[in-house]
Image (cartoon, rainbow, N blue to C red; front, side, top):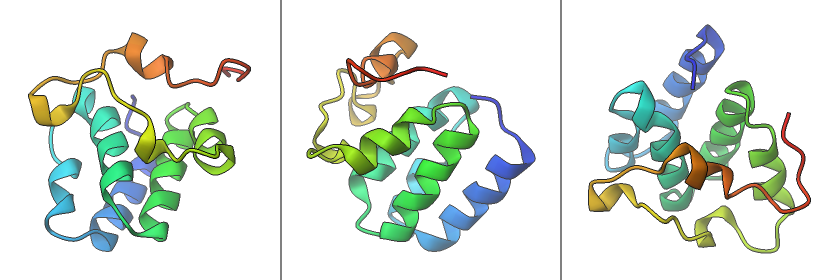
Length: 107
């Protein structure tokens, strides 16, 4: 994930929306950020935070994430992650791409 000025702005917005407990997901290096945002999406109850996470993922080049989150009968919260951050491991690119719906399009 490449951090653009727009992503930086959205991350600051997200940090203002989230509780101090959930702000732990906004720390770490660039490689951890994508997985942390997925974890935060699952952890937060804030609709505004979820919309901001979708905007970040779209800006980062994952536009299908928003479609998956909005269109799926199951929420992204319910998608099992093979490597959870709370186990000290992070999702690989291959595992992350497995979240793409079978009939989805990757741009």
